[in-house]
Image 1: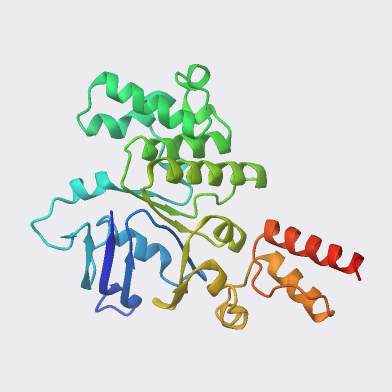
Image 2: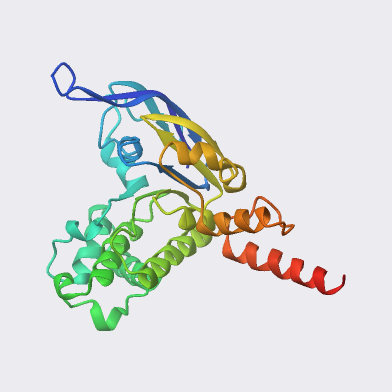
Length: 287
């Protein structure tokens, strides 16, 4: 499922002393099946943009076309769009409300009008995806779980809807490093399995580097450039000028190059760095 954003502008509190232009003439296309990263400093407009994608916010001007349907059209049923475009907010566990894990994850599928058998299959599959043991946790209160487990329950509730587009707004905020890596791996598994469109909003350049195919960079409510991770992370000075950076491993490679070590200048993952450094060491042994 593709998304096209055309000339999108959004103003908070228009006509008041607190009027703020959060988005200004944003144009971007996200193709069906893409895994896209959306980055930018706090206040750049990332969260405001993604909340437009399933109609949670109505634009001041411009339009959003989801799979050929202009969702800003007053005749469009946004409930139908929200079934196809799932949004996981930052700290999604704050949205938990049911008395058991099973009921919380089943809430969305029930609203789709599925049979009890179909609902059960979706709950089981979603819990498997996020590595929550079904028999052990299905009857537990979600509020008795650890922080990481609560996050997984909340994400499973969105997974169970099987959205064609999955939008994740800082889904790993506040998690410990191990749980963060596990949650991101589960998101990647979902994308690999279903080939759905995924949009990941993140402050972590390392996470974005490992996962996405294309990066969209925002600043002051505008998209300033976009491209593959390799292309975007070459723009060190530009990213730093807007309060961002590149993955830490890229700074290490840069420092090694300044010391005269002949390494490629477009390395942005630890695995790439490992291969390149080992290659350089072996070449020195043959000198």
